Length: 119
Image (tube, helix red, strand yellow):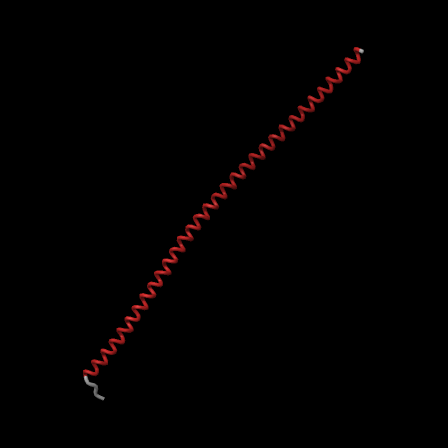
């Protein structure tokens, strides 16, 4: 079958239009995919920044807690030293009290003895 050159030209133009439409469709699809990629990339960057901010805040929280813990340990140590010191003071005062009490009893005994000698 013999096809005229005009018919072949029309067929080639139709094929060219179909190919061009397919290419345009692919270009639009590529643009949509690229836009979706950019949105996902922006979301990931935002999440990364948010995660870094959370990490910084958590690290600061940990540092503050460690600082508070160290202060509490130091304070507890100092309070323990004060308690030990006060207990030693109490023991010394109790010894002094016993010594003074013994001296007072001896003094009273001496007074009673001297009064009984005088009478």
